[in-house]
Length: 397
Image (cartoon, rainbow, N blue to C red):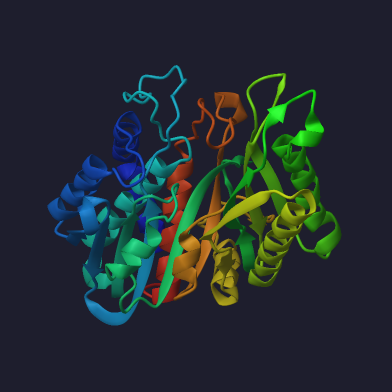
């Protein structure tokens, strides 16, 4: 079957895809709580005759489409979890769950992979190899669901893996990727400062944690500005600072929370070492006890060059009908990075923004939505990448 015929199948299936997506959008589930979502996926795959199994604790699904001819195994991954955000959209498919919504497009990712599963299962006799379907839980919450899926055998005998992210900062019709780092590593930190509280009018009798915390924030900002090569992208951001609760009391405690983002393991390790050193020395300087909890969340997403080149090659196919662009570096993180540390692959962004439809809110916003037609583009792209790797057909035939 040619890519042209697959595209025809996508068009035929699209109304059903919209129904799946809206059902999922109305019934979101948080990370590590995706029971009904998992059952929905499992039932669909099983009804199509696809071998499927639920992962640990029923939080995800791994399926395999067995091709009729020998060949490689191509893995495709979709994340399925939602976020703890109240849906504020005025649409008939808004979330029906209080303070939970799909605010990042994972309902679309799930739908995209379901559509590919249905299409390829119907044509499995013509496949030169197998398709591994990975419906992964908990991308949004550390430690993430990718490692669990890997432990459950999602990458066994897999030769290559592809994933997409619907991305509203890019307009619908655009597809974007790049060789090498594309998304940042994600680290979290929590700093607890213990000092000596007292009267605000007698600061010399105290160890002022508010003042020490402020000094520490300034010193931490110097890591990127003065201790990292300026041509290396990196971010240290303090997102939370809590100390004291009265105007006339010097606090004995301060808690600081934030995140660090980098694109290389070397810079990531360097910043963490500087963090530890600065916290230790500021504590000594001001006679305070400073406890640092520094958590390495996700590594950077690093695309393999050969598969990124495949992405750009696919963009030249007449039937792709996508504006293929080189992606900027994205400071958001993704646990797709764990898959790419084990097998070759490529992570791609598919534009899903549409200002005319009011679908231009950023990800993780209470009014987030995406142009559903972008799902067709994502299915087309993933099918193209898969077929090109498997050499099933001439893709422009």
